[in-house]
Length: 524
Image 1 (tube, helix red, strand yellow):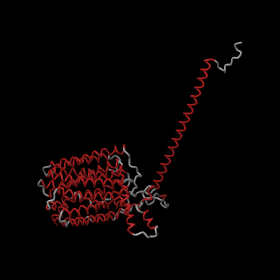
Image 2 (tube, one colour):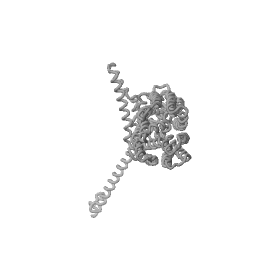
Image 3 (cartoon, one colour):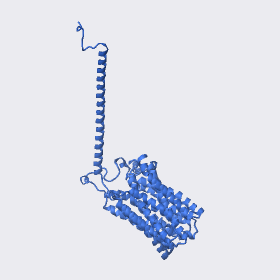
């Protein structure tokens, strides 16, 4: 009787319901696990697909890069390097040689330290301000036309400065004329960066050797010319020597003429055979092409002034776009660090001549002390630029050591009480200066990349110009009020220390702040 109506498959009572609930819960958990596993599998499949697409895209980009024309990394690039050497030999020597070249006139005119600072810093302001737009001008007119114009202006300005009869006349001829010309002419590294890739350090060595050699030879050369031909004759001869840089600029052929093309693509009509610009900037080969095409499409009825206006407006827009790179923290830090460093050491070297003569040293002694600084500058430039191509060379550490060395030398110089101590201190200073300038452009290219090199070059020089127009005259006023060259130089040492702190912080801004995108501006 107990077996009737009993079915094991139909649980009754509390135990049966519990077993059924547990079984249902187990099945639900199993279904949930299966669903989760399926979702994870689908997610992994999607991630794998994305990674595959990224790898494929990178491979395609690498293949396209291999098919793109490559810089010659030699060939005519060495002739361009020789041209950059000639320009660097004669153009930048005017700034450090200002004291030796014009101190007799300035002392004769009884010019104050503020006046001296305005003239010397005015030259640097004009140079750096012009350099801030020279990269943009090269995209419109080409490297050769811009540099040739600059050398002619610099030579003419220095020749006219020989006839200056007052500080105001010297300011117009030297500060404005020579500054404008040198700013247009000193674009050698921009074109070398496009001719060279693997050997960029060696090419930079050739150019920076010219700068160091010019600063090394100019003080005794100027002193010799002044003894033989007088101050006016020496200045006119230097104006003629500047024309050797004009010969160097004639070697600045467009890099597109010498690009290396892959063997299997030499006979193909590749859309990028004549430009280094990426695809999305192909249409920006020249700044005002689009405007000019619009003008010509009107049947030639547009007047000449309209075309000139559009040309100038296009250049101004391009300059503003290039300088907008300063909105990025890393670019602003680099520009400020460079501005304080260059303003510090240039204002120091300008006042060295006046400071030493105030303590009884002759102009000949001053020239030989600057000769020592130029010699160590030259040797340091050659050394660090040559080593920069090696993988084991720590460019950043050596670069920072150059700034630190200059700061220490500037601090110690006012303590000098003999010709030997002055020569030793200036020799140490020249070594630090050579390290800084030997690596400055290379470090800039490394940090900014080739695509952002031209706008970063311009933005950096704009910051330097602003520093010269503010810091130089202010320090000249401090010197006049305090009548102390020591205080003047110790303030400069403090500015150098501040610039060192900014350079140390640069890697932090590169990694923790908004980076500069490679396509933010079009390369030249």
